[in-house]
Amino acid sequence: MFGCLCLAAAWGGSAVHAADAPPAWVATWGAAQQVPEPHNALPTADLRDATLRQIVHVSIGGKTLRVKVSNAFGTTPLHVTSAHIARPLAADSPAIDPASDKALSFDGAPDVIVPPGAEYSSDPVDYPLPALSNLAVSFHLDEAPAVQTGHPGSRATSYYVHGDATGAANLVAPRKVEHWYHLAEIDVQAPADTAAVVALGDSITDGHGATTNGNDRWTDVLAARLLASPATRNVGVVNKGIGGNHLLTDGLGPNALARFDRDVLAPAGARWLIVFEGVNDLGLLARMDHAPVAEHERLVRRIIGAYQQIILRAHAHGLQVTGATITPFGGSDYYHPDALTEADRTAINQWIRAPGHFDAVVDFDAVVRDPRHPDRLRPGDDCGDHLHPSPAGYRAMGEAVPLSLFTR
Image 1: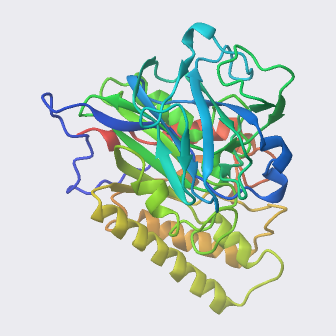
Image 2 (image 1 turned 60 degrees about the horizontal axis):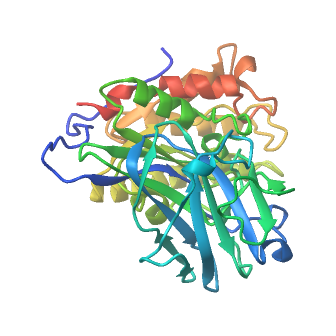
């Protein structure tokens, strides 16, 4: 059995059915924000008088949408002088369908100044957006931010040129980068029984090892399955994975507890949470040298404590919380896990699986582990680094999430 579901009876798991209720705003796409590492940040000169065109792949569709711009880690105001949306001709091209181009407004104006540390949603715009489609978001910055806000692990190509080309049908000789910048969320207005599931995770949720512009992360597979089922086609998926993220310490991006409010509670219409974090905490302890047994025991207690805090905070806001078991990483050249590390992973996974902790469990460990070597990924599901799954592994993971989590 690939997927394991343990669902608390107290949770119905379905979005509220209210045929007469007004439409609701629900996130159809999102990305966790952080300060890009130096090698992932754009040079200041490249962002001065620059147009960024970024392509995202949404989950659910809608007839009205809004775009959230982020200056969450900025230390100075961010001036977006103009912003447009359009349908790209391809996932890996800056060209758009000119007939689909539409300007965004903010409080009725074509530009917006986003305060430091803040995010800002555009005005609603009538714009039919099909489910599982791509959307190009273009905006122009007059000045480069002192501190950039972005998402380095986009697995999607973004394009940038100098000048205001937000409405251009194509970009002339654009520079390319596989990161997103200052783009946090796409929301759609949907029937009242629509809601979103947020995936809180690290690089395995972010999609390291997935196909660039292929949209084959495990969350993409889940989104396609939800849409295909009449019982769950009203459920959006928001990927809040950050490569290198930790539960307990700041790694790449803020630790999971520190970013919880912005990444889990803030997305529009969030109703469910899948927590898939911990492998980086486990790997870091013994990465450079062997740690004493007492340190391993302390780490296990702290990881479990972090899970309990996440459950507590999510429940306080009405979210149902699914825990995902930590996948194997034996043989990883980056972390060099030893027998004690594997014992830690086993102990934590036993706690995740035990009734009475999470509301439900998805056993990703059982999905991708090698039956002959359970501390390692199955060869066909390993991208080659013995830590991250391959596209085949991500597909198996996405198919293992029970859709019954999101229905009555």
